[in-house]
Length: 493
Image 1 (cartoon, helix red, strand yellow):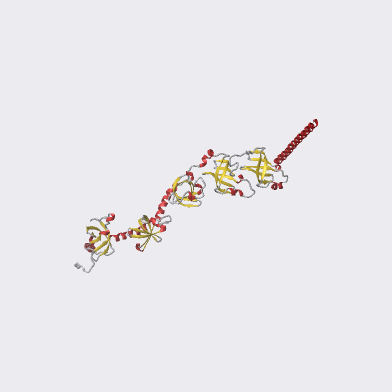
Image 2 (cartoon, rainbow, N blue to C red; image 1 turned 60 degrees about the vertical axis):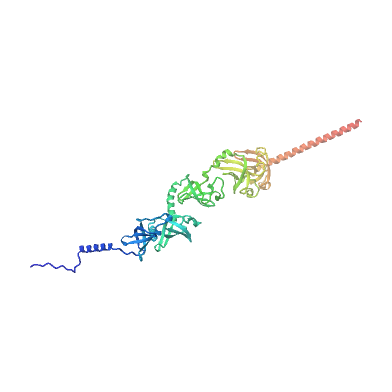
């Protein structure tokens, strides 16, 4: 049986090879036909001709369009265009030919760039147009953004106008409503830069290092100094100068550029102690040559404590007049009334310890023998002196002789048998005349006697009586002899 071939079925779907050939032909035909453009569509073309007001742009198979030269050229800025330049634009009209705009394309590109900057975290450069309520208007080409005043700098801006007209790098922190609401921050960039610098600065901050810095703020106890990258150290008031500083603003003010020395670094507490006086000559190094015990000179009281008064003898040279060097008055702290801070005084140097930077002095009364450096008495055995009662003890009475010299009248030398009568016989602050019995310079001890004065006085009075009696007898005898002579002369006559 012979089988005849089947007739082809014209209703059957085309083979795959035939379908691919038809799709290719259709796409080729469509590519050769110009497409119509829609308003708002971005395009890129090449300038093919320049007219008096417009430039003709070839947008490929989409036809030829025009764009105002004013959008492309800026004679004032020296910007010119020429045939062959490529330009990006946006279609703004198709009703009477294709009309393009380059500025709108720039704005769209800027919005796209700002949106991308938000996603990528990349910084963008913008210009501060003007200060507005709460912040600043920032321009990125044709796009406007807002920078809050707190985000324009790491420090508070007292005068917003100082930023107007300046170009900065910003970080996009908000991008809303398709670019209609954009918020940027310059502070974020500055803080990142400071953090990077801080890492490098911390490597340099070690004890004894000398570094430049800027005074950030001043407080009553000192000043905070920025060493770079936001790393701050404290310059304490006591480290500002060798002379005592009462007001830090008299030495530094915010914004001052200064050089400081690193004194201590506390990593755990994050504290850095700085010094300014350490970069100046230490006046105590010349104390040994310039000062001596017994020297009397002028000074100024800087402060008063319960244990004494501090007196500045020269810039950076401060001495202590201990409370024990003031004459007793019988009233507590009355000595302070004569040494108020700022008072000019005359002081005698009692001791010098240059290694510990300490000096002991006694304040002399103006016009006194001590102040004029003409002491007319010597504390030596046998000397008869007048002092002031300073204190009582069960074993005797302490007597203030002069600054730095206090002696003891033992109970047996007081002339008082009953201890309870000491306070009545020797009132604190009252004058008492004594005779020096013994002096022990090594132990700074002086032994005195009030009884010896009484005895010496009594002996002196007895001697005076005897002398008067002898004088009277001599005068009487002289008178008697004269009378006898006169009588004998009369008898001879």
